[in-house]
Length: 210
Ligand SMILES: O=C(O)c1ccccc1NCC(=O)[C@H](O)[C@H](O)COP(=O)(O)O
Image (cartoon, rainbow, N blue to C red):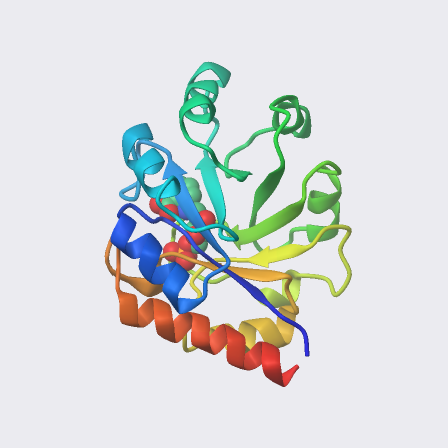
């Protein structure tokens, strides 16, 4: 049996974070990108992170944020892991000095292995769907056959996942973890507890069958 971990991203409310933890999520993601409909303020994020029980990884998501703004967030919010979701270089990610994952937005023709190798210091890569002008949270899946069987980093699979397609995604890609946002929402930024539960259950069920 191999466990596939599960991250619920784009949390904006403590009740949604607690529902994700109760459903068995391993990690929650907080979007520090002002243009996202799922953006959280420093105060909102701090209130969520400090109210969570231990053994749940809190991930802060950033899109080409200035170092000064990033430092302001990091000083106020005790995040476990950073997720760089923009065009940050490896040097920029590593200069922060925190454990990080790098989001890579995949489109047809990409050499995913080569993209991954650009970030040797990343703990993992999050493979998401490339949509022009939209850095993430697109609700769209990419062609999973673009992901090679072997990569130099653990893969977190994202992009258009739902309780209905996550089993097929895991069977094809065999990721370390999966990440979902829109597929478990009632509306943008507001999670639906029963969809969250169904999603985590679907991930756990496929893990047990592998
Ligand atoms: O969620 C957003 O609004 C967002 C905005 C800008 C950059 C990244 C964003 N989300 C990143 C995530 O980690 C999402 O979970 C991932 O893109 C998958 O989203 P979805 O396709 O809706 O499941």
